[in-house]
Image (cartoon, rainbow, N blue to C red):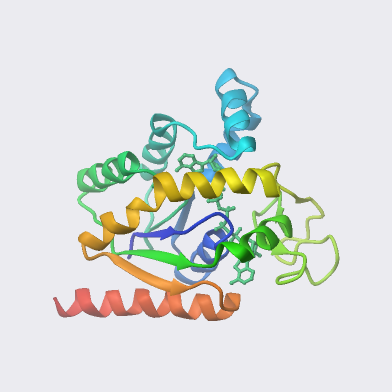
Length: 223
Ligand code: AP5
């Protein structure tokens, strides 16, 4: 069992790698982005506020996302949790530490997916996501085998995200550098940080992530 964080700017490949780990290692993906996209369809005032912030590329308030994560952590995960897009601020990182402490658990690795900003516009504007199973595709780098049909579940409900525009990406990146990138130093200081070259092909990135997890497992076995 391992609890890990996937850290990186919008479009770095966090969701893509998280889905592979779910399939391969029976881990549970906790994506605050997915949770918030679900919350925005609720028709409530909170849902409308969340939608407005997300579409512009800003960050939703810490108390809302911490509450969502706290709720999900109450369900068991025998393979461990993958935190995808959470934490995104130092407040969220401190809250996560407190929540895991309470469960008698810790973090096994914080994996930073390193990319150049230059590739991110192409990554997010070419992305589509299956509305039924959540599988992530890209028009060029990871197309579906049959156009418009999800490889995984056969659904034809392939969606584009409202915040996957060049303009919203600028704000998302600014938020990442201002509020999320300080977490790299935070986790480095705790000795939990590992970096992976996420400019490589999806399969190569997956192999590098697996190597980090296997190395951490070996270290904790020897400790
Ligand atoms: P969220 O949904 O978390 O979005 P994000 O962090 O901006 O990340 P993305 O989902 O855009 O990218 P990804 O890294 O998962 O990349 P993916 O694998 O899809 O958050 C959305 C919004 O919700 C935020 O802006 C904020 O408003 C709010 N929010 C969420 N969490 C929050 C929090 N904790 N606090 C406050 N607010 C929060 O890949 C992208 C594309 O590239 C895909 O098409 C994929 O096929 C392709 N691709 C992936 N890897 C590769 C590769 N190696 N080579 C080529 N193509 C690749």
